[in-house]
Length: 263
Ligand code: HXC
Image (cartoon, rainbow, N blue to C red; front, side, top):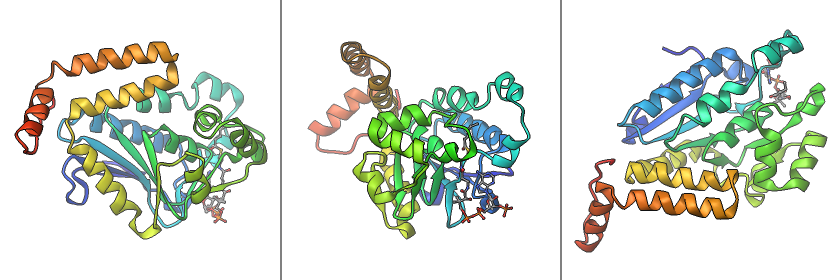
């Protein structure tokens, strides 16, 4: 049972889709340690549950996906606490690296600081017209601490990322789509429906191939082209030994839908 998030499997009747909702609307879903702890558990449960094949992360309330790390909590910590706790490290080590199955961020409003960084940890972002992205940490005398300076720069390039970090300005949904920060912008009222639909499409695919596709695309961020091409070929070759490869190709030739075993 969670206090700061809600988790729904097979969300709104979408088979295999887990919906995780940040649920501190009174603080614009600011990310404190309790939220982080619950998110780690929720993502681990999603990863472990073979019946769930794509997750969606969104924010409750009309205004925010997440307005950042919790400033009130951080204001009471000393530098030694941040260093000794390796503050923010679990986001990347526990959530990003251990969630091998796909997940989408559905950004419904403010995604600022840690909120923008959390959205960028997703495999991709679908944004409502009301979404606003920003790294305003400079206004607090600090800087991004959960990957913003790296992931934002890789997503939108140096010039825009530098401008956003140095001025703290927010980027609207239309600019975010134009800048390749988000995959798609949809009307505010249909954000959840559209994202769940996209997640259901992913959940209907052969699940091992979904993990493999994710792993390959992510390799492009970590390695040289030559190494990345080798990783791609090897994963491709491994997939050809799967039962779902035989089923997928047979289904195409026999003009029918594939029935996936997930192996
Ligand atoms: C804690 C927050 C919060 C946050 C909002 N709230 N953001 N609490 N941490 N990051 C709380 C407010 O204190 C307030 O509660 C309630 O949410 C509503 O917010 P308002 O400011 O009244 O709403 P509004 O006027 O509409 O302004 C919305 C906003 C603004 C523009 C998003 O809230 C804002 O600027 N928030 C902070 C954004 C930010 O700087 N994020 C980066 C954080 S640093 P009360 O109870 O007071 O009324 C970070 C990484 C840091 O993420 C890494 C370095 C260590």
